[in-house]
Image (cartoon, rainbow, N blue to C red; front, side, top):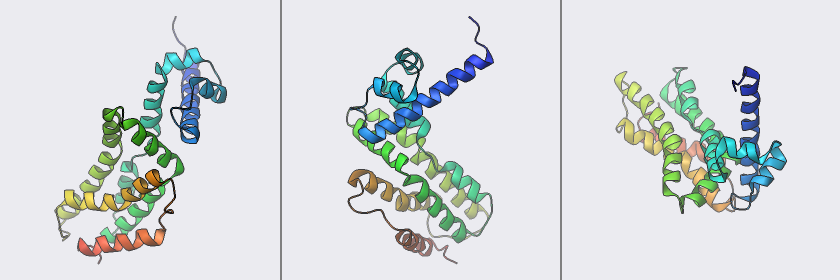
Length: 205
């Protein structure tokens, strides 16, 4: 049977609805306590469709994590494209990455990955490669471009990218592990850390 464009569009909409429902339920009540029946009740459709599209609950979890997880790569490239001075660029990147990574949906996904990685280490490795690694590589590209343009800085691009990203990722990790018990870090704290980095990297001016 040949599928028409409307059939494909309808199946794609159903897929998106299932992924969004699963994302919400995994965040609300955890992966283990969420059943495929719960997901179908919220998304509509049938269990048969879920099995057809994702195979099983583990396959659906992978789709949720690797399609919903945010990489900061696009944020970094868009900000860098404005060609603002390094200090201004990095301040804006820090603010926008902080906004992305501390989004409740993003934090919930990280908690799921942390829990799942105990049983499936390769799952956590793939998550890292599609999120933090892509973000770090985009940052490194900026530092390389600045270096090649003759902008003086203290440290190699790879090291600077790693340190700068660490200032932001640490907030995400703390929020995911503590479940907010230590309080969400303020933008003032982020600004102070960013300025400390800029001075150490010789980019504050």
